Length: 197
Image 1 (cartoon, rainbow, N blue to C red):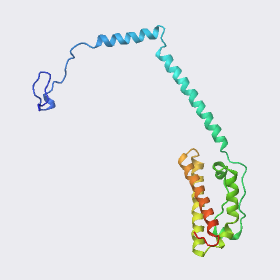
Image 2 (cartoon, rainbow, N blue to C red; image 1 turned 45 degrees about the horizontal axis):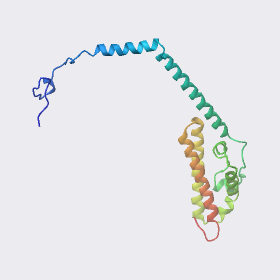
Image 3 (tube, one colour; image 1 turned 135 degrees about the vertical axis):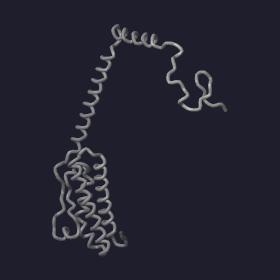
Image 4 (cartoon, rainbow, N blue to C red; image 1 turned 180 degrees about the vertical axis):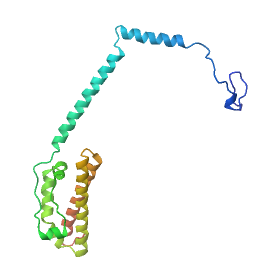
């Protein structure tokens, strides 16, 4: 295997042995100049100038941006909070064992399915009765889970209040709603005779 060689065919051991400049075999400028003149003459002639193409692209980008904004506003308006939902009655019993599970503005904004609202309201109404049927360790575990979920919902809602367009926070909030429904459903099923958590 032979080593690298320079333009004259001599072996080169280091980069310092290479020449600092090499003249091209032919002059490239006349061809470049001819191509530039061709572009300029096309721009002056019947072809669309580059400036007009750029302006057309800018107008197209502006139209696309406005269309995206309109779609975003339309989607956002469909997610606006509705006119409040049912709330769990505040009694001394449910304040001591379970945090308030009343729907919030974010519940209405992100969970607008009426079936979900009815099912959640029914599970919340029966929650105290179902918790009473559970053994004390299970009741403590469920209450702690619901308190953690409620705290997570409030923290996420507060963070979304500062950054309402944050998709990650929105997804986390929806997951928290799903966790809440899972716990409420598990409590409902676990309090049936012969079942447990």
